Image (cartoon, rainbow, N blue to C red; front, side, top):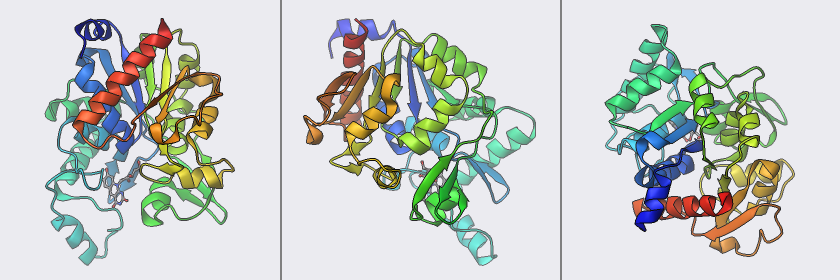
Length: 318
Ligand code: FO1
């Protein structure tokens, strides 16, 4: 990597908006290139819910475990080397076992729930967990208020995890319902105030990125930023790398393509990165574009994409 590029990056503050697996992988790549004191990851908490009496924050934990080097590479969520004794016994006792909390993962939910019950904010609890997973990057929940995403299907209104995990995202989505009056934390607003580069990770635009933008005044602050806002497409060859993004796009009346994602973000973004498989597809967009290999299959490819993204953002900002 060129040393003048690294020197330039070291003077800039980078903020990444992230949901689950795609966001965590890109955040990990960015963390290899950007000094930790210059990198903030703002995470979706619309997926959070109360389960078996505990506060579970799936996207925060996916980023936490990935940056902490303890993520399960097969599932994309939860811990590597996990065991399942507690959830098996929970099932035997007639408890809710459709959401698989592993034994190691449970420790995170126990500690988080206890600290929240003692009156700490989710931001403070997340900082506590980061210290114990030896994470130097600033990891922030978008809000300290509960902000549960609901999914309106043709038949009913479903809490996000019921739709996503229990119903395996099969009920067709008519509308994603985000709560009103959710406010960003002071820490999030401080990070955005000083951001030189904002990255929208290749996460689901509707249920990962939108809930973050919806926490006032995150969208407004990003719109007002003088410097580069760059999004990475979560769609490759008309399919989502993981999860329901492509299916949702069809159900919400869009074509499942990178171009639709770029158009959906519209004036919010200055730059859009999409995969080489879709080369040529985004030729006529209003923002700058970069074609890359966006499938982050290993640590090397995460760092490569993060580096290309930052170089692209710098070229836009110049
Ligand atoms: N996703 C599943 O598909 N099945 C599960 O049983 C499951 C358990 C789980 C436990 C902890 C955690 O942090 C995440 C978990 N997830 C599970 C993933 C998660 O609910 C979703 O992938 C995200 O909310 C979407 O970003």
